[in-house]
Length: 525
Image (cartoon, rainbow, N blue to C red):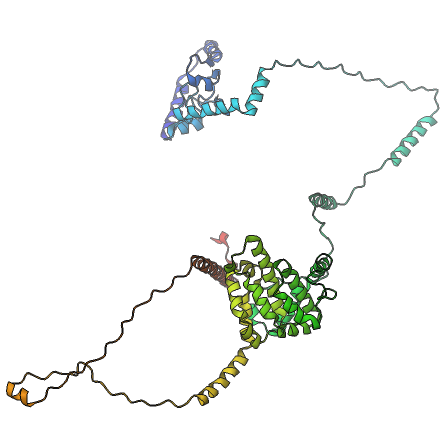
């Protein structure tokens, strides 16, 4: 900055000292300087290639990039060889990027110029530009002669005056016959443009009419909220949620009846399973292949929706145990391929939807052991956790435990007095008391006369206890460890997200309740 100020001050002093005595004599050197303003570089050095052929001394002498060809700064200089911007660059530690236009280029910048020149010659745009430059200039086209304006013919006084009126009337009729442009009200043109754009993109038009149906609130997918709902609310919620799938189910069932009548022939009646054939359907579940399980589950769910007694008949026939076998096939221990795993996951989601509506009893849970299978599905089947939401088996197990809690308490209370009555009284065994080793004191040495007279007391010997060898704990398999770590990471991420949302909710409540924050304005400070 000090360098710039000194340079500017020096220029002001120099202009103050120069007082022209004769303006004509002073104008001649100025004219000579103007003629010698252009400077031509002469030499065979490499940096001459990246400098302009003629250097204008009236402009800044800093070199510019100019698309890799090199050029001169177009800013006019004031009392110095550089403009204001390049003066600041020259004073800084970096210096001029490409040097002066009449001086050498730094080595690393010269390499950049070489690469740019080579790229411009070898690339397609560079070759086309070179061809255009090598072609001879095309001759300029001559402009055509301008048409002379025809002078209007003088009006003839002998012609009647009615003809111009007829011509005017014809013009009016022709104008009336032409389609006239109808002006639309303000705002409608913009709506039409938006509608045409949406039609071109393939999107449906937005309905401008006001919606008459009430807007449904977003569905709550919180596990705590689902646990707080009673049985009737859960059944109503599941019925509303799965009723939207009826149309898709009907189409799938029709296609199934048309294409694959083999395994379901003689079992279904109009897409559903009648009550007398429930036992046969449960027997067929054990032999059904993977490709037909998804359709089988859809038929079961359709039958459950059409007949409410189908659920109890299906549970009594052992359908829950058959469903457990299908769920176990989706676990990673079966070593399924990717395609088979996707099919198993689709069957699992449909089976979980069926379990939501089945009237499962405590005796059925104990007999089938499906609770442990559901816990394994919750830990190792990702689509069941991500896509099923409340259908995750953990929520099912908790809901079933909540439902059968009173029954479990009653059975435990009945089992305690029966066990106490059936148990015989315990026999009382008296063991001899063995004094500790510290209590046994050896007698003091006696003389030979007294030792011979008194009897020697025997020292008690304790039986040797067997040595216990610590058995090393069995380390779980590598696949089990990896799945456990993945599950812990997912739980930790969910817990951190819930904690962050809870803190944001509390902060919002504090800001809403604080009146000082609402009336605070930054402009007051």
